[in-house]
Image (cartoon, rainbow, N blue to C red; front, side):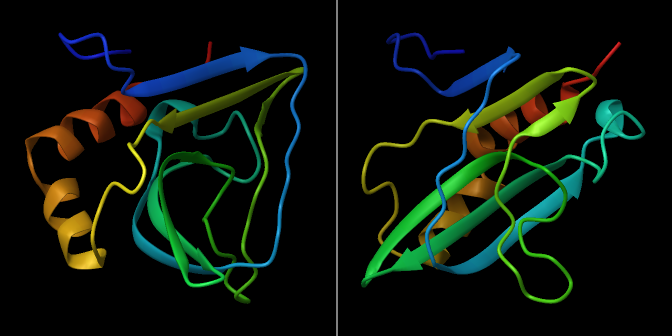
Length: 128
């Protein structure tokens, strides 16, 4: 999905192959909600999540689908694709780097028109 200037806003991938690269981070979850159309099709339930990972003094903001909560109840950072049968699904908002000066600016963007429009796209995804 892109805006009128052809700048990518969301990348969505579904297929049979996926890979995850993870490293130690301190993750702050700004917002997360289960995606109704994916509930019951994958364990754990996919969420539309907005969070910031901090490592080596750098902040990396991410918004997209997560396989369950972005941080488990025991505090572990969750990474990985969403499994739907024999397929995988990923969806991530594309941000310029760096997108926000701080968490307050990120939250203001998220609750504004663009953030809520992109969240609506993520929340509309379903599996049949």
